Image 1 (cartoon, rainbow, N blue to C red):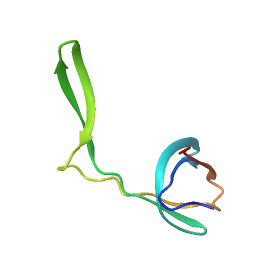
Image 2 (image 1 turned 135 degrees about the horizontal axis):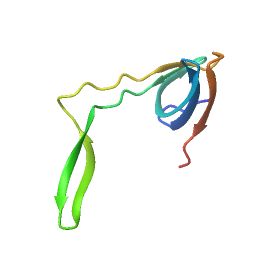
Image 3 (image 1 turned 135 degrees about the vertical axis):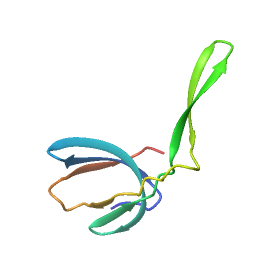
Length: 85
């Protein structure tokens, strides 16, 4: 049902609210999905001739976000839609 390495948009109930987030499947063994860890990021302001730009870059000093483990048969799981290639 889920392809390892594919990116999906997940919709779930967390704390009584519906949330939506993106994740890449690292492993899938029904009914559990493990999402890939996300490296730490930071923003940098870049001064250009036309003004300022904001760039999101890797932060080697930051802590990565550990990938979620999702139970697809949980009543809190709403849906997952694969990102088009």
